[in-house]
Image (tube, rainbow, N blue to C red):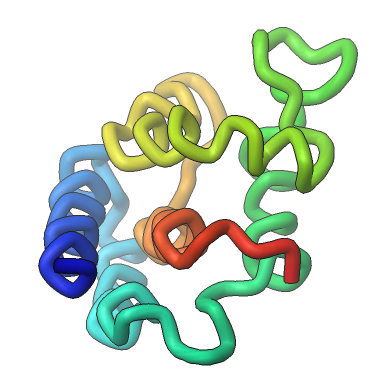
Length: 125
């Protein structure tokens, strides 16, 4: 069941990346989805690393608005706060509602990494 769900997630991400209007330079990034940790059923390593893979994405694309004093309602400035909001964040990333159209541009590879991290348990690693 987990593999079927993982494959559906990858399909949704790839579709979402295209629907989000990824530039042609981002299109190659989505090619990494075949080796995405989710597709492998979350290997022993637990998927992408929060510190190495996810935090830089948050810093680049999210924390401008999602931090104390920011313009958005959710604070994503710590692992604990991101973990608490993991389900709505996954939905927002997969449906291309975040980042907003007038905000930073998240690449297809960044969307794949974030989704893999959420699907693999959103570990603090």
